[in-house]
Length: 113
Length: 113
Image 1: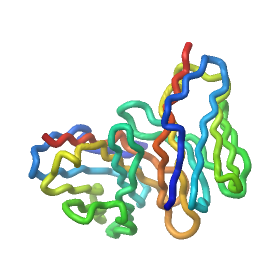
Image 2: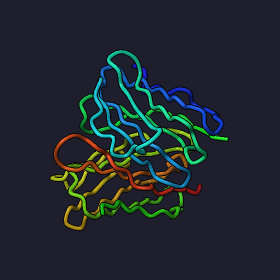
Image 3: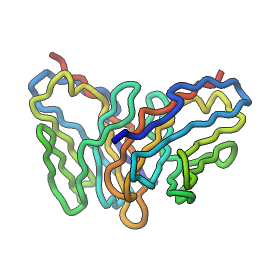
Image 4: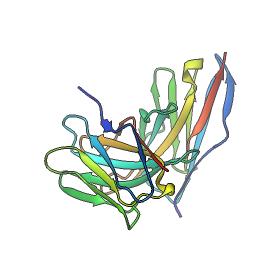
């Protein structure tokens, strides 16, 4: 049973470009969470999604950031017109029923030049 | 405002001793509290979950306590080993509704051989 798969593991973008980060939850998990982690800082909640629904996006910046979890395929975190401050590690986690333990991927590390 | 406090300074202990990490929180009424381990460049890995009506939980060399009056959890690793060196994250899930796990900044543990 494969774990949470994130890709790409590393992504380099120039300012103004778009970044797309993908997350495939564990098999049977329909709850997906995205977190952002800056160096020497904790994991910051961004968004919680279930299939085809955004449940809580209170941690998402109001502009340039969006997330989706379609009926088929991985969850996508999209960052438009990236700026240097978007450079961070973005972690995806999944759970089977929205309670208890979170299963994390290995993260996608975005570097904005 | 809601706050989770972990000692952000690194904790250094001698191999074989018991490591004790502290997690304090304010303005939360968590349904449960979790501890995760994170190695450099990796995603967090779940260790233990303790519910609000539980005082203590054990798993092999790990022990967690949860005092909702003091608003504090202690995480113990007995007979510590160099392989236990990592950052340990405390996480809270508020009561009621859907899951929205919030993480502390973590405490870096270094076990010295």
